[in-house]
Image (cartoon, rainbow, N blue to C red; front, side, top):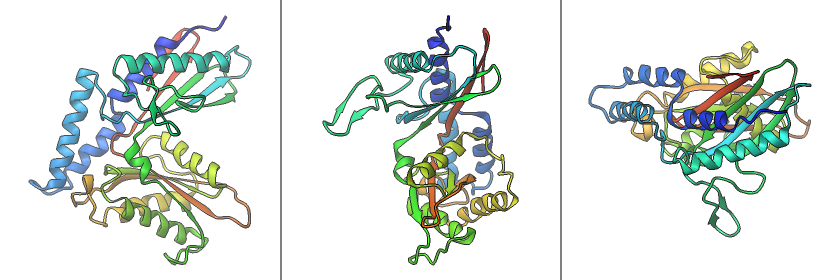
Length: 293
């Protein structure tokens, strides 16, 4: 009989909403030293870090916009995990998390403009993706993606004559930097860029979010893409946008890129912008043992 892990998933949601991952916090703290003392940029970063500390200590949401919940569930082949039951447990945990104020009620019916009040909306909210994997570990990953940074995401179809961007990595560089420039402070910088090259319109956007589940500093195995990741982060930080758009040296703290196959007729580049409140956590279940990262 499958175990009921609703309470464990509830803890995953609480951790994700209230406890910023250490790799993100380390990047933010390092960014403070790059900004001039007394500047608006440094003040914004110091306020952000104080908020991070208070949220962790008081178990309150890092941001008032607790974001769109995006779950990826990797369930082991032949271990008896039912995706139907897991979906029910995730939705039950989300409802409890909303009641306990770890999550703000965010699920609004787009047709009737009515908030469900419990972060449940049809089969699409929260967003839950299942994938069967080898081994015996059940892994559930959660990302909470805020509306502000989601609004400044962008998708380009190359070639783009407006930007002089062709169907190559040079063109990818141009459109990604254009997306950052257009976002300004509206994406709650300093941000993290998730970039997908290729695919169709839908799969490209999905991949640009999936890559954001990786830890900061983990480079693509393809040396060309790894080099472009580093270059885009560096060049984005020369745009002068800075934390929350106040100017300064820190606009982007990392870039992650994934290449995909595409049709000959299409060349999409999708950019998912993640705000400084880079909320993502993972839990693994191995028998009765539960671990959180």
